[in-house]
Length: 270
Image (cartoon, rainbow, N blue to C red; front, side):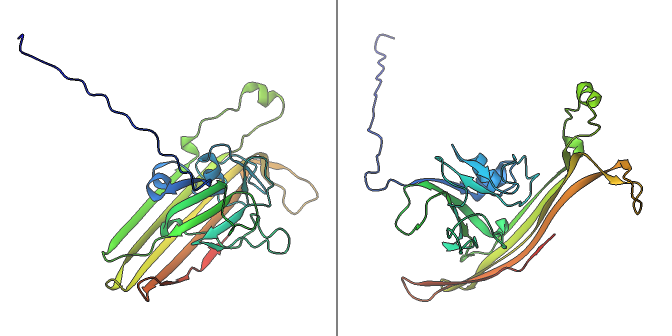
């Protein structure tokens, strides 16, 4: 027993400090976006970015698991303005407020998350390529590869999984119903691989997603077609937002240092 010895070695190193780059950014990988119960939209990105808030039509409301769908909204940080941000896909802008600040949250196209590898959120210290301030979002698409791969994701919920905060005190004040989720769904899948190994690849993705949310105190009119409004307490009014996207992307390695991409993504909204 007296011959036993024990050696404790303590090592340490200085943290790595990037003295060349002052950019602040957050990278949301596909694994993180699929694992967290978010709606994979602007409101969800703000919830995952420290110090960020949302504004805009629908953007000022908190999103819970995707109940706000793809309503217009923009991210703000460090006291910035709502019209300063930019929306990019593979480095190309798709926000269409080009007549005023050249930025903002207006758009008529939405990235298909089944075809996105990761989302990059830049909050400060951007390079000279950014001609305006604000939060810059960039969706990095999938390119396929030399191995055929499949991707599938499906989530959903309804009112049965939501608790109620409609108390007797609220009922005495005239509130007979509450805002609650009617249904949320997000179904998507993709397939990619080589057309010609090391030279030409493809990636196809399909996604169908949306939400329905009942509004507190709003009901359909039981006496439709008359000058009177009679609330139908069995038919709550709800907002519906659903989208469908079917995208295909072709990537070609035309030289050792040059790559060409082409993408088609027809989308349907309601």
